[in-house]
Image (cartoon, rainbow, N blue to C red; front, side):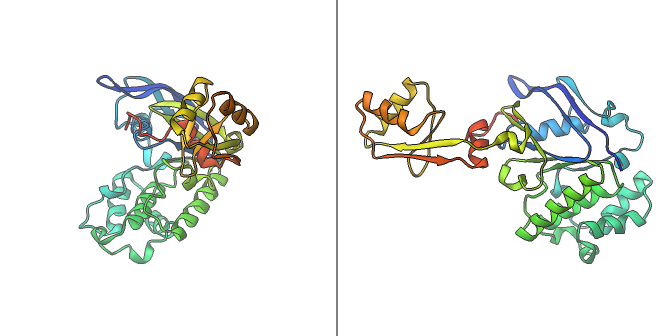
Length: 299
């Protein structure tokens, strides 16, 4: 099965003076898992809701193979979505939920059992959803997304609430679905949650793209951890040199400079050092450097 290309073109959404999404442009290709990443409030969910026709853009467009979601002739058979795992009626069983959606979309009943089996909730299918854990609700949301055997999957924080076994399972499932030629777009606020399952990433902060490319393009660099009894003086010296310091338990993490240069900088500023240590940054460190540690203004 080959999925459609997802295209975001100059997509923007303003809520009054707040620019939740600001001129978003990128493409998601079939046959790969693309991670859509950013801190809470970065604008990820608003972007996905515009893609699915739930929110009207201020400007720009988001389409599937050039077609807006609302104009797709068979949306559930084209695009599988899982945005809100908690939106199911707690009094219905998982199987009954899928029956309702399948009947409305003209999807055969056999697809219900297939979706329940793929997501590992067949044995709990006749239990009321109100008794489901968050992880089980996530699996039911994914079963709904797979109900029409779609070529495109759009999943918002699908790993949230899953135990370690569930996380391993969904990583394998996403990779298998992409290997079948489907287009898979997965949002998350943590790179560590999806880095073992995605092929490429689009990272946004405050509604704008700050990085797009393969995981290899996020190759970690070296940072230097430095500290001083006069940390305020050290911060001032770093700022005067145009260097940004990120506070950590060990001290101040500085990228873009060597230990030798930082030692010389501290000497010129007459700032005594208690720590000067180069360290290899992890992917999560690189991610946090791109998006910052604070929440965005989007949704």
